[in-house]
Amino acid sequence: MDSMMFVDILSRWVHVGASVVLVGGSVFLRFVLMPAAASLQESEHTALRERIMGRWKKIVMGGILLLLISGFYNYLKVTAPLHKGDGLYHGVMGTKILLAFAAFFLASVLTGRSPKFESFRANSSRWLGVLILLTAVIIALGGFLKVARPPQSAEPSASALLDVQRPLN
Ligand code: HEM
Image 1 (cartoon, helix red, strand yellow):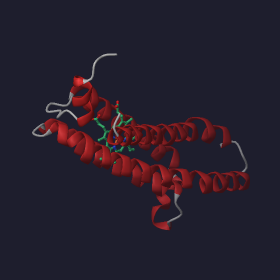
Image 2 (spheres, helix red, strand yellow):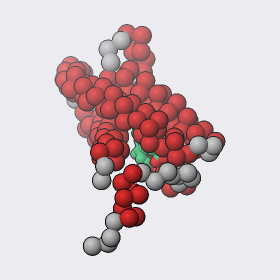
Image 3 (cartoon, protein in one colour):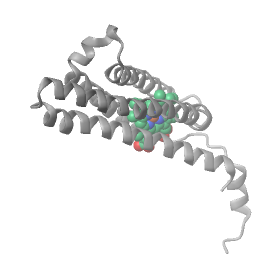
């Protein structure tokens, strides 16, 4: 395994791992914590919300950063060169990136404090639901690209060429 392959695997691991943490946390918030906390008194509810959002926000911001770095690395350095001329691949990837930006916006305003976006937080269960739906579509598009658009013009890496020449044992 050459060092570039190691970085490619690391980047994929970071990308899928960050998405598991962010989507899993959002599902937990929307379908477990929010219904469970709904019966609390207003003051208790607000205090709990503040404490949870203060911590969750840091994970959300870190996760968005990791998804952006790993996503653009995976696309620009790894998958785009293997899909030259595949318009459907790049179109679906462009759609995935746009939906991801919409998801990042929703995740940021729902965990943020800006008064401009208070209306999103006032309807947080609806917008968290929209965010979860968006991420479900984004993951489906990622799966489609992986399974239905395999690389066309894979140029063998140096290590792959060496493997061909290497005896089996
Ligand atoms: C909410 C945001 C995002 C989520 C939840 C997400 C999730 C995922 C998942 C789960 C995969 C693996 C799919 C599979 O192998 O079955 C994937 C693949 C990928 N994602 Fe993302 N992603 C997000 C944002 C982004 C962004 C902003 C980029 C930037 C370009 C990006 C680029 C990629 C690339 C290049 C792949 C590999 C596609 C392939 O195998 O051909 N993703 N994504």
